[in-house]
Amino acid sequence: MALAKAAEPAYGIARLIGEGYGKSDGKDQTPIDIQYGKLAEWLGVRKHIPSDWRKRLQAIQAAASAEMKSLPADFDQTASVSYFSATEIRDRLAESAEKRMFGGLKGSAGTWDKIVKAYEKQNVHLAEAGNTLIRNVDFDIPYFKKQAEKTQHQLSDQEHKHEEYLHNAEAATKEFKQECAELGMKGSNIAKELAQLQQQLPGLFQEALANLSSPVIAAAIDHYAAFTAYAHSATASAAAPEPSTMLPQLHAVKDRSLSQSSSPDHPISPSAANVRTGETPGIEKEADESTSGVHSEIQWDIADVAEEPSAPQQLQEAGNDDDDVGVGADIDWDVALEPSTQENASDSHGADAVSPSEDADISWDIDITEAAEEAENADLDTDASQSAPSGLQAESDAHGQAWPESVLRLSEDSSFRTAFLDDLHELSSFLLQQIQELKSGGHEALATAAPESIQRLSLSSVQEQSEAVNHLLSNMTSKKVKQLVLIKTSKQYLTRLVRALEQKAGQHDKFLRLARELQAKQEEQERALRSNAPKLLALVQDTGRIKTYVEQAISALYGGREINVIGEINNVI
Image (cartoon, rainbow, N blue to C red):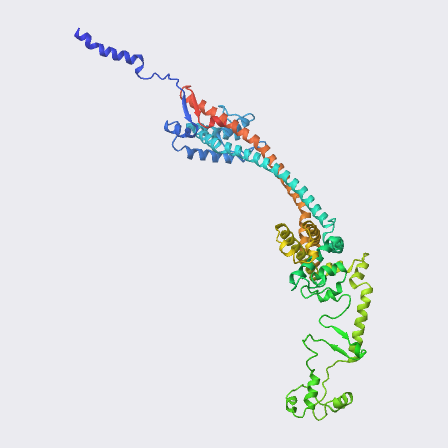
């Protein structure tokens, strides 16, 4: 009994081993999973490939690359060298190659058969297949996919950009035509048409000044003059000055009295003021009617000229006064004393002349007869200019349109135009101030002492006057008027405007050119996308075939056991 009990544990252990805990019988069919990125390492650890497989693989590929150059013309000599391409070449050459006595291939087919066997020796081709899977899955296939996605995205953006270019071309043409329409030009010859636009300026001023003589604006001017005179007078009953002295340029344009419209506050430029008379600026000539054209006096703009004795009179007084000879002798007039001069002086002045022994008369280089004749001619020219057309009017008549002198002055004389606008701004500001005072009731304090013309003024009438003046001011300062004035007065502005319009005119062609270039680029990218699609498909298919071949080859090494190459490769193929 004791021996039997002692034998039971041994029997039990032997039974347990026999039931499955013993050594494996080699018929295990559990699948083997191998990461595609570690396939060569997996084969090396299990001694299925030699440790120097990389060096052997390089030698085999070098021999295969050398043989690729001697292939017939119907073979692709630029294809990459691999075990699968070498096998394909050998099979194609074997179809027409001669065989040896023992079944070996001759010639080029035999050489490629040796290369294939070198690949298969010690499973070097499996290590190469592992590297090919890594390159295809990690690099080549993602590159083609990303390139295709990038190209699709670029094509979509370029499609929108192409439509934007076409829209911008249409908008540029529309903007150019609109600006040309605002300037009143066609746009076919920009520089010439802009230079001709200056002729439109008098017409615009004529339209703007059409309402200047209206009763409303006239009432506004009279109200301004009356209120200004009342505000600056010592007593309320003081007589108001002439309205033309308040807003001189405004009155000048309204009353067509431009030749007498200058004032100290708004002086007219000499060149424009003397267009009609032809006088020289700075000197005023005036004939003395009492002397019947014999004597002419020149005004040197020196105060109290009549009160102080002239230089010849001082010299005469110094020579006649025996007590003050020393004073007269101290004055050196830088005049040489000649006998002829002394005789002429004694004959012309008689008893009042300076004695020859004392001093001589001073020659002022003025011909009295010629000065008188010039003064008379100036008066005649002034009278004639008032009845005959001025030089500006004559010029405008040459263009087929006779403009009023006020319009031409506003077109030609920048200083007069500025002074006229200053008067309009001053009148507009005055009326706005009057409206504010009438609304706030501050005008009532002055109403009791103001003249009747100011007292009976109502808020509605002042508002009406303000609107009329502002309307005239807006017409005089419109965008087109400003542009024409700048075109006429500034060559730099004209050059910049011509350059800007030419640039806008070229925007249409520029955007169309960009649209054509973009369309050509789109077509090129579409061709590249279509050519890359078959390459990507062939690469995916080759990767799938290599994976299948590797799984079958390793399965043969393990007696038909199932082998699975796993990882990202399954998502790629």
